[in-house]
Amino acid sequence: MLKIEDLHVKFHARDRQAVGGISFSIEDGEILGLVGESGSGKSVTAMTAAGLLNREKADAWGRVLLDGTDLLTLNEQQMRRLRGREIGVVFQEPQSCMDPLMKVGPQVEEALRIHTDASPAERRQAALRALEQVELGDVETVYGKYPHELSGGQLQRAMIAAAILTRPKLLLLDEPTTALDVTTQSQILELLKKLNREQGISMLFISHNLQVVRRLCSRVVVMQRGHIVEAGETERIYASPRDAYTQKLIAAIPRRERREP
Ligand SMILES: Nc1ncnc2c1ncn2[C@@H]1O[C@H](COP(=O)(O)OP(=O)(O)OP(=O)(O)O)[C@@H](O)[C@H]1O
Image 1 (cartoon, protein in one colour):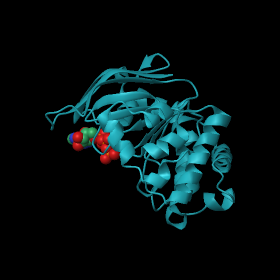
Image 2 (cartoon, rainbow, N blue to C red):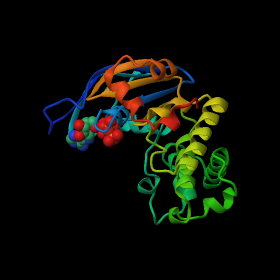
Image 3 (spheres, rainbow, N blue to C red):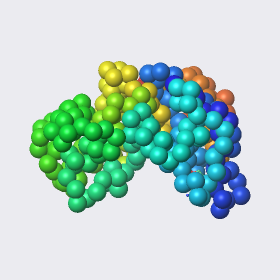
């Protein structure tokens, strides 16, 4: 469904390409992991796929095919439409993605307000349904709360609700659990698994933590300095990493976490 072919991204201000010619694909209904240390190009890859790369500061070339359409050829308006309807995006810090002065419910509905002519009542219904899908408990109450009245985990669930509201085919998740404590992180991973299982949403899950990726993704792509150093079945890579850099990532996982997920 998503096929990235020889993607390059270069910021004008930098000599080295942030992404130096990478290729990988995500199949229908798959959750693909993208791992690598800070600065390896994971976020830039996701931002480019989401059409969020600032074209005044960077050039991108190659192909990013979503069901055959090359997203790199779309203009900003076409890309915005697609992002609202077919691609959902979730980032690491839910706090910084929400307007602190606006109640949570209307923010969850945003995509419908922008991309459809749904009435306010229909939007509200859809938002409440999405909040239920992400298991936010008393959804009527959550709908009327301000962001600061929710916990980090609840906020991240609300962001996921906003991202799935328009029933996208693909979710781009950039370190969505990194800012959360371990228990909340596990709950969000279970939620993502459920959404993938029940709604068939494909996902690109970005993390610097191979252990987290292992719990969610059957396949993983490992990036270092803008290049792919290894890709394949997560368990195979975990059990016998071929690349020295991947070995280092695995060695960085505390021993007690290295058992079977
Ligand atoms: N706006 C920008 N201007 C210039 N260079 C940038 C910009 N954004 C990212 N870069 C550079 O692109 C490279 C890849 O960054 P990227 O954020 O994709 O890494 P990452 O693997 O996602 O790391 P992290 O886990 O820290 O987010 C880095 O060298 C970074 O400094």
